[in-house]
Image 1 (cartoon, rainbow, N blue to C red):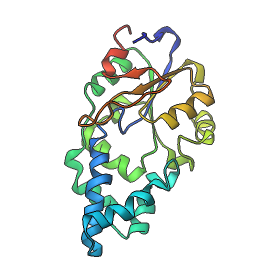
Image 2: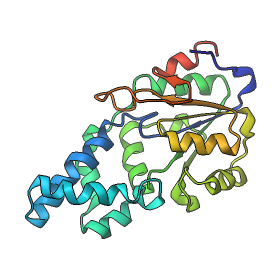
Image 3: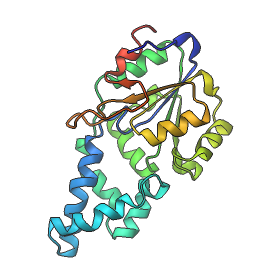
Image 4: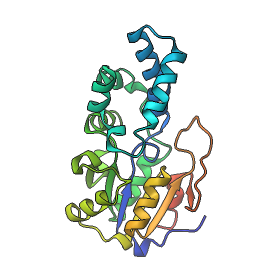
Length: 220
C-alpha cells in the first residue's frame, strides 16, 4: 500500500460508520433487528418483513432520507431512535481508530468527522465511543440538507469548514461517496477494505484499500 504524503495533508476528513466505527452495529440493526421489530409489530413472518423492507430501503439509497431517523420512524411507525438505544451495546470502534485519531491530533492535523448519520444516531454513538475529544469538527450531512453523495454537500462543507480540498485526506467505506469526494477535488482518498469486522472484504474498485487505520500513519 503506498504511503500517504503527510507533508502535503493538512486536513483529515473521516466517515464514521464503517470507518471509525465497526459497521457491524448498523448491519445488524438494519438487516436483522429492524425487520424483526417490523414483523412483530405487524404480525408478519420475518421473511415477509424482509421482503417488504429490503426493496423499500434500497429505493432510498444515496438519499438523505436513507440515513434519517425521523423519516424511518414515520415511514415504518417504529421508534427508531429508541431501537438504536436498545441495541447500543453493539456499537464499537474499528480496530485502532482511537489510536489513529490520537496520532493525527499529536501531529497537528485538522480532524473533521463528516457523516451521513442523523444527529440522533450520531449522539447515541458518540456517547458510546467517546471520540468527540479527538475530533476538531463534527458534521452531519443532515446539517446541510444533502448527503455526501451529492456535490452540494462538499460545496457547503467548504463554505462552513476551513480546509483545502487538494491538501485533504478523506477515508470512507462507500464507493459512491468516495467518487463524490473525488469529483469535488479531494486530493487524497482511501477506501475501507473491511468496514464490518464480521463481514468479508469489500471491492474498493479504483481506490487504495485501507485495512488498519494505524498503517496510514506509520510514516507520520
